[in-house]
Image (cartoon, rainbow, N blue to C red; front, side, top):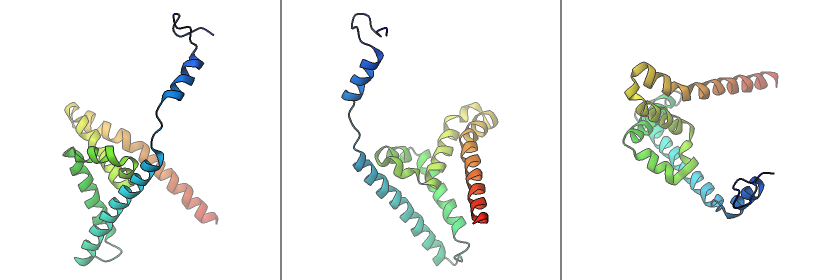
Length: 151
């Protein structure tokens, strides 16, 4: 094998071994606990908002839609203010609870590409991310429905 650096006389495999040995290990258990707790706090906030809508007279079958819209609005607002990213840096995967994480991704893409215009910037770049999520969501729902129908 040829060395990557002739003066050092080190191979690619030796270099990869050194990198693995020297790379710090992430605090896996700490990250899992923080993600679990922060995701739970987001779900708790959603439940609190749902209870507010229930107290305002929404029926238990209709309360889901305004709750989801409120969570999307809050995540988008926090993204626009630059707060969501700071929270996500600390909480990691906990903020990727589907509704808030997806709203953050969409809003961030819209803000990033707004200079390119409404259609070619916001419209196309924002839905470049959303398209794959929607496709896999539909396919997953189809497969789940098919399994449910068979069983």
